[in-house]
Length: 288
Image (spheres, rainbow, N blue to C red):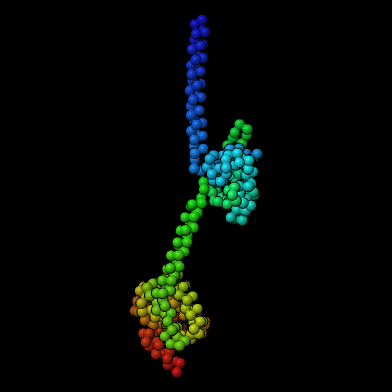
């Protein structure tokens, strides 16, 4: 009898411990279910048969009516035929699954398709899992629609700013026809590579459009000059010469003169004059 009582007490303790473990498991399952069902990201479980389960966010993201409608879908209908990179979705999805199983998980961007036919970008996370019925994939979609829209708006804003800056640079370096066939370009501020490239393009276009035979570069207001400045100026004057326009450089300051000499550029072909007035008078004389 004592042995029976001792065994009974031990059995009761085991039952109590088992109930505690079941309660902990039930709590964990409830927490998982809450996280799964109420996550703002779409969660789906796939295996070789198709979609086994999904949460509310997945139904909403796909614009579905209910879970049964989503579970009845073949996974292939949730993607367009081709991804933005030109690869077929079916072929690429096989490779993504392989990488997830090889690495333990895999994250990538993908374009999915709602039940309405609308395509939308997502960040996909694939995690291999094992269910009682066999291996499966836990799939998480993070909708990137708003992020992509903000990125597009930011790019458009940057492009607008760049265009405005280009217009400002164009206005800051006007191309003025001081005589018939003679254009003058005042160079202000700094002559960085981008400004020099844009100025060269504008000047060459103006020389062709106005059939100019001479161009006067007035560098009086050029604030700073580095080792690349002489190359920019000479490149412009050389290009103008190819179009049949003689180049004149006026307003060279002592500091710019030192930079020109120290740049080891061939200055033999560059004609310089002290002032714009003298350059215009020279052009008038050559046209008489």
